[in-house]
Image 1 (tube, rainbow, N blue to C red):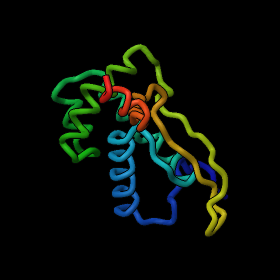
Image 2 (image 1 turned 30 degrees about the vertical axis):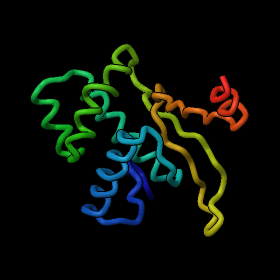
Image 3 (image 1 turned 180 degrees about the vertical axis):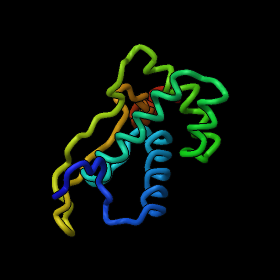
Length: 138
């Protein structure tokens, strides 16, 4: 029976699983959206939400605890200065999982794991050649 098992081992030993959590959480905070499988996303969500909750109160103790998991200094700074203040009024539920369908190779359920209040990146539109010619003629 599988009673009182609180997490999915994901077919990995302890050290490999911890390394996976670290790398996926770092990628989530760096890019604010990652594409992964559904079981991994559900486990990474638990880790990421705990880290964001801890980062909402910026002090030395919390920085050291979060730094154990997020070992990239730039991402750690981004978490405490940009990401956590966005969620200061939210009592939890900082991430969402969007289903994408099945992966072609092995039919594994693929999802996007993203932060709820994500900073949108606006791409600049290139000027059309007609607009360039008009501005040069004037």
